[in-house]
Image (cartoon, rainbow, N blue to C red):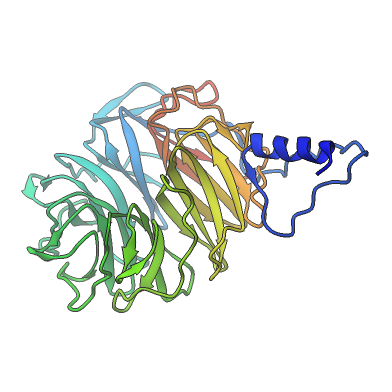
Length: 391
C-alpha cells in the first residue's frame, strides 16, 4: 500500500466511518474539494410551549394530540412559568401545543414506552410501575385516549419492566425484562390480544441469552424486528438483532452480523427497504442493513450510546448521550441520509450535559418532536420536550 493511501485510510478510521464493499477512495495526488453537508428540511432552533421537570422517554401521536411519558412530576408553561402537576404522563394539543388540562393520569414509577393504534381509542403504556391512576397496574396498561382513565377490561400485566410496546392489527407486542405475563411464563418478548390484554396462545419467540429491549416493523412487513442483549431467537443464534413472525413468534432466516463483541442494540427502526439500529456499549453507533442483508450497508460511530433511531422521508434520526458522530460535532442528536449515512447540516445545540441525552423522536407532517433529559437548547430553556418545525 502506498503511504498516501495508508494516511487516507487512517483518517477514515479516525473519523469513525465504516466503508462498505465497493466504496472507492478518491484518486491520490488531486486535492479533494470539501463538499457541504446535505441540507435539512427542519427548522432550527425548535419550539416548545411546555417543559417537564425530568426526562421524557416516550412520545406517541394521534391526529389531534401528542402524548409524552417518562419520569417527571410537573410541566411548566414556557411563556410565563405556570407550573402544573403531571406525573410521568401528559398530553398536548397537536396544533397549538397547549396542555390538555383534562387528561391527567399518574404513574407511581417510570413510563418508558407509549403506543397507539390508528383509529383506536387507547394509549398503551409500558414501563416500571405498580399503579396507574391509583389502581394496581403491573408495568403495562391501556389508557383511554380521551380522558386518561384506565381501561378496566385490559388486563395485561408483567413481573418486570416493559421497555417497548408495538401495536399491529389485533395484537400488542411487548419487550422487556419480564419473565411472566398475566402469571404465565413469557420471557422478554410476547404478544397480547389488543382488546383485553390476554396472552396470544402458542406465540413464543424463545428468547435466549439475554433480553429484548426494542421492537420495530417495516411498512407492510410480516416480521417483527427485535433488538437487545440476547444471543438467540427460536433456538437459533441471533446476536442482539433478529426478526420473528408476527403470527406466531417463529424466528426468520435473517441472521445479521453481530456489530461487535461488547455491543448491544438499544433501538430499531425500519423503512420499506432498510433496518436501522442504535447501538450501545464501547461508544455507540448507528447501523443500516438492507432488507435481508447480513452485513451493514453503512455504520456511523458515536462517542456515546445511541438510545433512539427514527426513520422519516429518506432521513434517519438518532439520539443519545453522544457529542460526536463520525468524528463530527453533533450533540445528542443527528440527522443522516438513508442511503449512505451521510450527516446533514442539522446540528441542534443542547445546553445540558450529554447524559441522559435524547430518548424519543417522532415525526409527522408538522415537524419532528424530540424528548429526553435536556434542560435547554439553542439558548432556550426548553426542558425535556420540543418540536423542530418544517421549513
